[in-house]
Image (cartoon, rainbow over all chains, first blue to last red; front, side, top):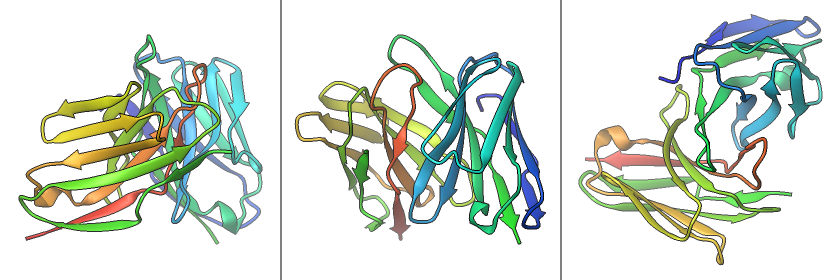
Length: 114
Length: 111
């Protein structure tokens, strides 16, 4: 357990509505990541953060935005949810240093967009 | 682009040894990771290789050959609880430490 929680753990929403997922860590790690996991695709990076107010895009960032106003929280927002964003979303933190950094994952959020 | 390949499914017998292969073609290389993921749960870190050779950790070992773009995860003395998906991931470069994942290998252990 790397001190990561995600909320909500499950959510059902309708197409066109905004959705915000929250990732919370208790260990003051600098780097945080949002991934989505879909059958046949594996885990794909959406956005990541390297500090408060410092974020960058990953390989599947279209339709998503993020914010990090404090170290412990990293928010993922779907401005207008679409059915293609139905997925399992995982948050991760980077732990370690000196070239031995490893990512640890939160429990995930299952999102269904109808 | 990044390309990481691993078999989709494997089946092995309790008590046996199984080897899960991973091949990669990436824009750079700064480490290869293996994660275990039980159904409905988060991935959990198993191993990390950055230099060629074998890293052993209990019943699990991971091997890397950078020149061949190849790694394997070796699971010994299989137990029923080892039934899970095993994810191979490559870190192409330092800095943000972004990982690129394969689609995973679903291992089923049978009695």
